[in-house]
Image 1 (cartoon, rainbow, N blue to C red):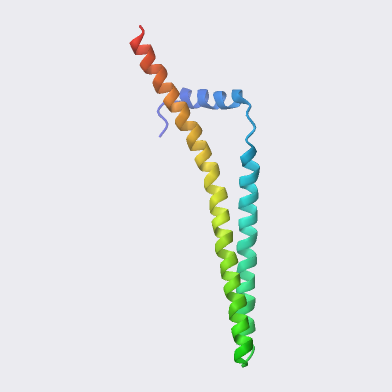
Image 2: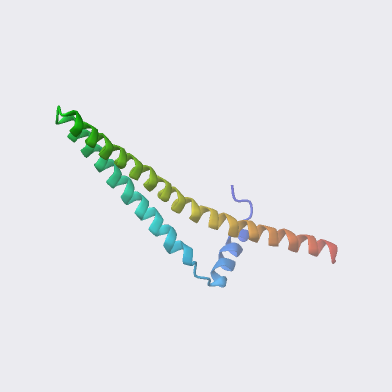
Length: 116
């Protein structure tokens, strides 16, 4: 629900006027891609460990395969955390910019009311 479309346009213009390049955006994209890659690799390693453990009757080989599968699960969890960190960072960065803009607008309104 957008109550004031002119405020949204003004916000977009103000952000564009800042012309500030965000160095963390590339890092966040790297975290997202790296996390997604680790999740895929972790799932593949876990499945390979499972298949290897079922393919033998040797208990020592099965235990080794179980360890490999657990390493795959751990890699998947780390990848998920990196992906989540990268995706939330972009949202929080926009949210903070919007909060600062709204506080500035509120302060301007209060000052205008105090100084007629």
